Length: 256
Image 1 (cartoon, one colour):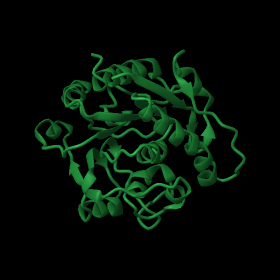
Image 2 (spheres, rainbow, N blue to C red):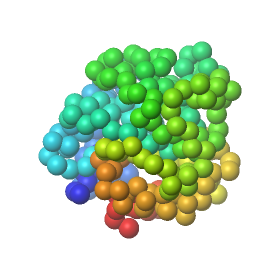
Image 3 (cartoon, helix red, strand yellow):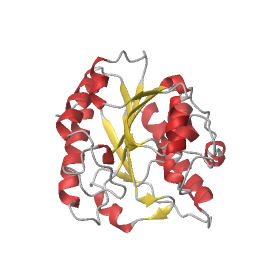
Image 4 (cartoon, rainbow, N blue to C red):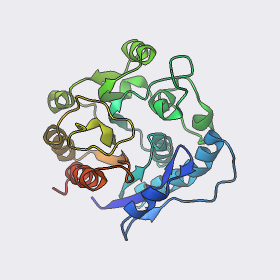
């Protein structure tokens, strides 16, 4: 399958200059003028063109690969998939659950809420602004998520999503039929191997384990879209982190 890449060089709606050099010569860049002053309206303005790009890429028979500064970009990717008539199972790799809402979050950080938003829980401003239909919790597989806030942990336990605390459990997990959308937050990797992340959590799986799982997913032939929440290029260890993350992405895309 031919892959088409797009970089959204923003973090929670704000331009992150350090992300822009990550774009390779054949990548598209999602960098529209943003008129809104507050975070969620800015992200709606940002993710609408991302959604259109994803839909067009699918319609052209290619696979969209989104690289962005935070996990909220998944809302734009999912909206684009839906607009192209694709209803995938979502497999979410992350050190965190991203399943908070305004009642469970201890910090008020929007970047800790996008998976809950996608499931129709809590804050829905961006969901409505993008014309996104929340996905059934039964179509969500959250893996690792080793660093959960107390209320978030309870919400996950009481939900219908599948939480696999060990990423290698996916090797024998019976995946639902149909297309797969894989979201890869690079902070899922052991911080000793991929250190340049803004919200590190100790105890993650080694890159070798993720490589086995990504190869397994690639061999299904059903990975229809991929999104990546990138390393922080301004932190120590950024070059090493980029090398590890991109090598893992190559495996997921069936290139290695």
